[in-house]
Amino acid sequence: MPRFETQKSPMAPSHIRQYQDSDQKIVLDLFIRGMEEHIPATFRHMLTLPRTFFLLLGVPLAMVLVSGSWLLAAMSIFFVLLLMKLLARQPWKKYVAKCLHTDMADIPKSYMNARGSCFWVAESGGEVVGIVGCLPVKDPPLGRKQLELFHLSVSSLHRGQGIAKALTRTILQFARDQGYSDVVLDTSMLQKGAQALYMSMGFQKTGQYFMGAFWRLVDIPTIQFKHSFPSA
Image 1 (cartoon, one colour):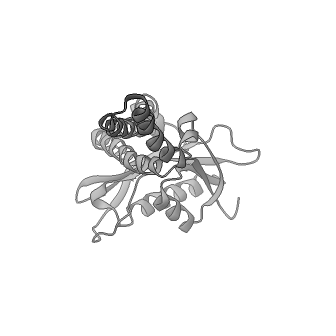
Image 2 (tube, helix red, strand yellow):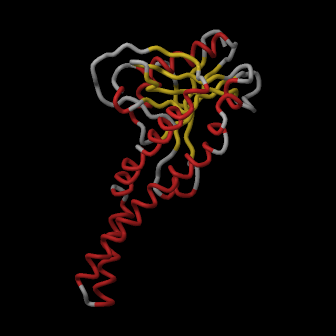
């Protein structure tokens, strides 16, 4: 799930290169912070759901009927909101923990040591400010050779400079050079900027699904995208 520019800022020189071992700390930091930035958006989305309205109305009303205390009713609203905020954090924290124990635990092993995969960083002013990786799809459709984009993220201080687009373009060029027929990726319904970027670069929506029970409960699907090359 990617995280990148949503606001404009002055252009600054940047370049993209392959991941090096010395990048590990800043890369993991960019990944973690990028994922955690989705927590407030998830919470705000939860507040717009009709079931949330009925919950915030029903719980305090029940407290008044049971206890006769408007103070307890007001406190119950606070605790419901606190619980919702904690629930909004949990799936993102879980996703980060999963990645830190799988592909992001050893980036060279996961991305750099096998043909057909890679991991890049974007540098600006000598600092790593963006990341992206890609891996071959294990079971692509018959007759297709597909590459999947992972972990596109750009530092909040360097958004609006075209870095996310440059990283995505790097993936597309790599896929062409390696003979892939498609580049595929998943992104959250909440990430409107991501969807706009991908569609502007020739990606098409191919479907959506819910990653788990929580995402279905809060009605936040994962959107699937695919970029197919003309010769494929």
